[in-house]
Length: 612
Image (cartoon, rainbow, N blue to C red; front, top):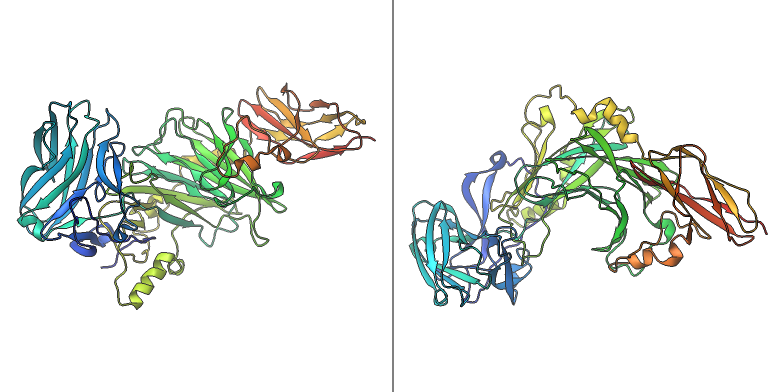
């Protein structure tokens, strides 16, 4: 049966070897005999019992976020590639106050009895602990002392129904006995002989989705996207940009007050030995947050980003963001805005510029990408069994100043994806495509509300098929309130508007800069940065990060030499007196303004030459 899905990357299959021997046979994919999303056949990755036995261990299972840490390194086996990056001896509690479950999944072909042995090591000073083991919906309780567990605690359970069975282990004792080590659970018995251990990647692989403006949307220069996390779990779910990412993280399905946005402008790769020349660097120009800090990053490469911006003081249920581009010569300038639902207005998050990478590049946003990922190494992150569902709807802004609903790739575009190429190669070898636990689809209400759904994670997998047309009739969809004309005008607002600066009263050792501000903003103050080199928007920060090439980016020869004292400024003319200059020398300068609505550099530098 055809599935209404697009799947974008492969998962590899695995067998593991715990302390007590093989956990199960190598993984094979098999049909569950049931249907999932859009009627697609559900596929599982299963390891058959080895010699009538399956072993749950610290490598082949999952655990609730923040509840455990995997410890004790074991040698990796080849079959683990792609499912987990490390192999472990045991699970230990991560936080004395954070209770949670460790869980494994079985496919039961023939109901019957499971004979289990639980191997764990309890702290010697712990007199008694209480545990529960859950088999599907049924729960068994265990009272254990310090001497229990080393020889294996026998547990018996009768499975009455075939199908997927979740087995979860949890400690009920408070506070948690932190020195406990959970090693493994060995399973045997009639129900295990034909059973399979179900496997997926330790954390969900990123699901990537690309959105397109329709052909009738000519020369789009802006998009707006609304993002909701349908499932109450955590993920990082930004929109991609020509320079990096623009987006935020969800925690338990919501955006917490302390979480900011990521407007990351990449400058150098992770293997770069030095920063690009100044003229090739991206620049951060402005923000609508007075408290924000113009900063940098050095993780997985080096670049610039805004930090410490309080976007949602009270948190938010969803992310609503806008992104537009302008061009001046060979430089593209990008503007990112966030809609504050509590205040019912758009707020500028960041403005950044970047020289275009190719002479053929055009300042049009005909499509944009997105992804949903769950970061974290396998020793602390093990939520691959939990599905993340992200819903997005978006519009592109054309040259006719109209909004056009975003859509998924056309059938022709779908054939160009890496997933499609891999599936064709498999077909040529006479093999079935690999099934993945991720998909992208038009939501059932796309025609009426515009939603597109992406998911990653969970135990259920699907084979890729082309995306069918959206269901239902094309109706008169109303634009959301944040795209009303008076709201759209806010997407062109800036905290400061600069006039054209001019150097006056130029002498051999001094000059006065007249800096007019068309709109200074309330409580405006400014610093004029100057020096013998045009350092654009780069000033020496108090502390420079040590990772990547951040030290090179902000070296003394690439940052402004001098700065005037902070002074009040107003709309209209403002004077900045420069002294102790060198005769016959060209000086460059640029103004930086802060006010109650944000902060902004002038978008251009100016220069003058002192008298001989």
